Image 1 (spheres, one colour):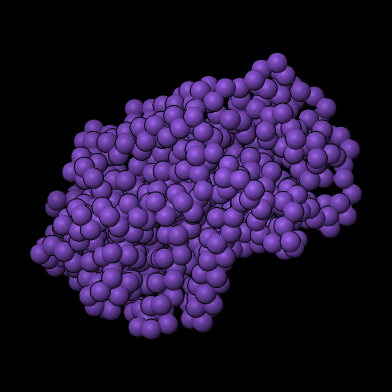
Image 2 (image 1 turned 45 degrees about the vertical axis):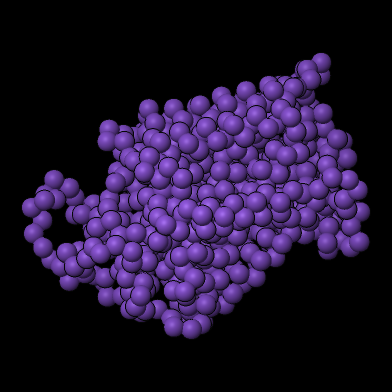
Amino acid sequence: MTVPTESHELTHVSPATKGPKSQVEDISQREYNDRVQLMRLGKKPALKRNFSFLTILGFSCAVLVTWEGTLMSFAPGLANGGPAGLVYGFIFVWIGNLTVFSTLCELVSMAPTSGGQYHWVSMLAPRSCAKFLSYITGWLTVAGWQGTAASGAYLAGSMMQGLISFTIPSYHGETWQGTLIVWGVVLVAVFINTVVSSALPKIEGMILVLHIVGFFGVLITLVTFGSHQSATEVFVQFRNEGAWPTQGLSFFVGLLGLIFSFAGVDCSFHMCEEVQNPSVAVPRSIMGSLVINGIMGLAMVIAMLFAATDIDKALQSSSGYPFIEIFYQATNSKAGTAVMASLIIFMTISAVVGVIATTSRMFWAFARDRAMPAWRTLSKVDATTHVPIWAIGCTSVISCLLALINIGSTVVYNALVSLSISGLYSSYLMAASLLLYRRCTKGFSMPDPSSYPALADTEKIEGLVWGPWRVPGIFGIVNNSVACAYLLTMWFFTFWPPAPVDNAKDMNFSVLMTGAVVIFSIIYYLIWARKDYKGPIREV
């Protein structure tokens, strides 16, 4: 299902091919089917399929960490929107993500490759612009995931410093200390992704257990101890600390933190070449993680708001994170607050492990299709560990180098990590809108059981077939349309500052960073990449 750029034929892996299995007697039937499925897309199996449905579900939940993420990003919603804005905003963002990823899961079910969005754009876009749109989408996805890797490590470091300053008031964190913590977090992620990479599925499964157990531990503490707000203050009270002209505008500006708490839902897309039966397991894991994390996230938001007896004090917390002050208001114990906050920090570090894994697979897949500088090196897979060591090293080094910027200017660094939202949402919008275009024009063929997820030939509409996961008929069109509308709206508001701007330091520079990525990718494409990048290539 890729843009044909090589002369290789796929007749030996066509749906009708029965063929002798003497070469694959040492592998299971399931693995054989997975390999043939990937070869129909023109890709040679290179990674080991260590993830089952349950372990990739654990991976998705561990990367998403929504209930922890809502705590980390509580401040924007409290200031713009207030308690009621956080509750209704969370529901709005949750439903929006369900529509977006039920749509994108249709694409991964058709073509389960690590390339994800840029691969799907290549197969869906008009032939005249497919290569270019695919290339831009690939760079936006790479930038989005690299921003997520940098921001995850930065959040872990800044929360650690914030917790220390809260428990030891005499401590004043320095930016260089935060940078060193970022490096330490990245090194932990590199170790797990390389030295013990074969144990990654088991580690993610254990993290899933801690994710759920920790949720109940924090939730029960919040609802049991301390005094609580009234239901009116939680579900009716709005705030507009940004002094925007209307409360509605303030509400949408305050959604940025909630959007970030759902960042990285597509992690399983880029790991799907390491998943057993990916056309089914990946969509189920994505939707399952959204349901699980959404329920826990909403419950945590409501519990936190009932426990927040002094929101103004929380917003002015010396830690820089309102949730730490709210923990203290609930427990009236610095030791108890430290234990609960340490759990959030640990889960954030655990998420970085999965984010580095996902980002490296995106680097590797894009390099495999000759789209990145040094693609010959970045596309290599280690013969011993069966993971893309060079890609893991590349994204890790970039994360560490970006952390140096934090020493000079936190404003510039925050602008760089804001790419995690604008870059990923741009890639989602591109893929979802092209799927809607295809739905409303040429449509798709329904596969017979032996032919899905898809053929590699995108020149013919017969090559584009639905996979096992599908929202059928008019419901699919409506769902796809709502997803595009949601993505466009949220993408627009990701570029807004928290309050009307008086000077440059208060600006939201994400529009500048996103524009820089697009301009760089266009220039690099025109000068160099168009010679090598012909769209997703056929390797077999």
